[in-house]
Length: 116
Image (cartoon, rainbow, N blue to C red; front, side):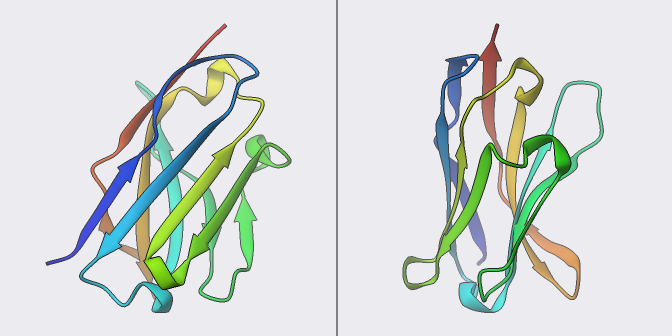
Protein backbone atom coordinates (compact mmCIF):
# COMPACT_ATOMS: atom_id res chain seq x y z
CA UNK A 1 0.00 0.00 0.00
CA UNK A 2 1.39 3.33 -1.10
CA UNK A 3 1.32 6.17 1.41
CA UNK A 4 2.52 9.74 1.11
CA UNK A 5 2.15 11.60 4.40
CA UNK A 6 2.76 15.34 4.54
CA UNK A 7 3.58 17.28 7.70
CA UNK A 8 4.90 20.66 8.73
CA UNK A 9 2.09 22.97 7.70
CA UNK A 10 0.72 25.66 9.96
CA UNK A 11 -0.12 29.32 10.49
CA UNK A 12 2.71 31.83 10.11
CA UNK A 13 3.11 35.54 9.49
CA UNK A 14 4.31 36.99 6.23
CA UNK A 15 8.09 36.81 5.94
CA UNK A 16 8.42 33.73 8.11
CA UNK A 17 9.46 30.22 7.09
CA UNK A 18 8.06 26.70 7.14
CA UNK A 19 9.49 23.33 6.20
CA UNK A 20 7.16 20.71 4.80
CA UNK A 21 7.98 17.02 4.82
CA UNK A 22 6.48 14.12 2.91
CA UNK A 23 7.22 10.60 4.12
CA UNK A 24 6.73 7.95 1.46
CA UNK A 25 6.16 4.23 1.86
CA UNK A 26 5.12 1.41 -0.44
CA UNK A 27 7.08 2.74 -3.42
CA UNK A 28 10.69 2.64 -4.54
CA UNK A 29 11.07 6.32 -3.64
CA UNK A 30 14.37 6.86 -5.40
CA UNK A 31 12.84 5.81 -8.72
CA UNK A 32 10.15 8.49 -8.75
CA UNK A 33 10.17 12.11 -9.71
CA UNK A 34 8.64 13.84 -6.68
CA UNK A 35 6.75 17.10 -6.56
CA UNK A 36 4.95 19.58 -4.35
CA UNK A 37 1.63 21.00 -5.48
CA UNK A 38 -0.70 23.49 -3.85
CA UNK A 39 -4.34 24.41 -4.10
CA UNK A 40 -5.75 27.67 -2.81
CA UNK A 41 -9.49 28.12 -2.19
CA UNK A 42 -11.34 28.58 -5.46
CA UNK A 43 -8.25 27.89 -7.55
CA UNK A 44 -6.90 24.95 -9.47
CA UNK A 45 -4.13 22.81 -8.07
CA UNK A 46 -0.75 24.02 -9.33
CA UNK A 47 2.70 22.50 -9.48
CA UNK A 48 5.02 24.34 -7.10
CA UNK A 49 8.28 22.41 -7.44
CA UNK A 50 9.57 19.15 -8.82
CA UNK A 51 12.72 17.12 -8.24
CA UNK A 52 14.07 14.20 -10.23
CA UNK A 53 15.63 11.12 -8.71
CA UNK A 54 19.02 12.63 -9.48
CA UNK A 55 18.22 15.93 -7.79
CA UNK A 56 17.41 18.23 -10.72
CA UNK A 57 14.77 20.77 -9.73
CA UNK A 58 12.13 22.99 -11.30
CA UNK A 59 10.00 25.70 -9.67
CA UNK A 60 6.99 27.76 -10.58
CA UNK A 61 8.08 31.37 -11.12
CA UNK A 62 6.18 32.68 -8.10
CA UNK A 63 8.34 30.72 -5.62
CA UNK A 64 11.75 30.88 -7.28
CA UNK A 65 14.37 32.16 -4.86
CA UNK A 66 12.11 31.55 -1.84
CA UNK A 67 11.30 27.82 -1.86
CA UNK A 68 13.72 24.90 -2.05
CA UNK A 69 12.69 21.32 -2.82
CA UNK A 70 14.94 18.49 -1.71
CA UNK A 71 14.81 14.77 -1.13
CA UNK A 72 16.40 12.14 1.08
CA UNK A 73 16.28 8.92 -0.90
CA UNK A 74 17.75 6.87 1.95
CA UNK A 75 14.81 7.81 4.17
CA UNK A 76 12.15 8.11 1.43
CA UNK A 77 11.36 11.68 2.40
CA UNK A 78 10.63 14.77 0.34
CA UNK A 79 11.03 18.30 1.70
CA UNK A 80 9.95 21.81 0.81
CA UNK A 81 11.73 24.65 2.57
CA UNK A 82 9.59 27.77 2.26
CA UNK A 83 11.16 31.11 3.15
CA UNK A 84 9.85 34.67 2.94
CA UNK A 85 6.30 33.40 2.90
CA UNK A 86 3.59 35.64 1.47
CA UNK A 87 -0.19 35.63 2.03
CA UNK A 88 -0.60 34.42 -1.56
CA UNK A 89 1.26 31.23 -0.59
CA UNK A 90 -1.74 30.23 1.53
CA UNK A 91 -3.01 26.88 0.27
CA UNK A 92 -3.22 23.18 0.94
CA UNK A 93 0.12 21.68 -0.06
CA UNK A 94 0.28 18.16 -1.48
CA UNK A 95 3.17 15.94 -2.33
CA UNK A 96 3.00 13.73 -5.37
CA UNK A 97 4.96 10.86 -6.87
CA UNK A 98 5.31 11.02 -10.64
CA UNK A 99 5.93 8.26 -13.12
CA UNK A 100 6.12 8.92 -16.86
CA UNK A 101 5.16 12.57 -16.24
CA UNK A 102 1.91 11.59 -14.53
CA UNK A 103 1.26 11.98 -10.82
CA UNK A 104 0.49 8.42 -9.75
CA UNK A 105 0.19 8.94 -6.02
CA UNK A 106 -0.92 11.83 -3.82
CA UNK A 107 -0.63 12.70 -0.17
CA UNK A 108 -3.56 13.93 1.86
CA UNK A 109 -2.32 17.51 2.03
CA UNK A 110 -1.19 19.92 4.72
CA UNK A 111 -2.58 23.42 5.26
CA UNK A 112 -0.28 26.41 5.05
CA UNK A 113 -1.75 29.75 6.08
CA UNK A 114 0.23 32.98 5.85
CA UNK A 115 -1.20 36.03 7.57
CA UNK A 116 -0.34 39.57 6.53
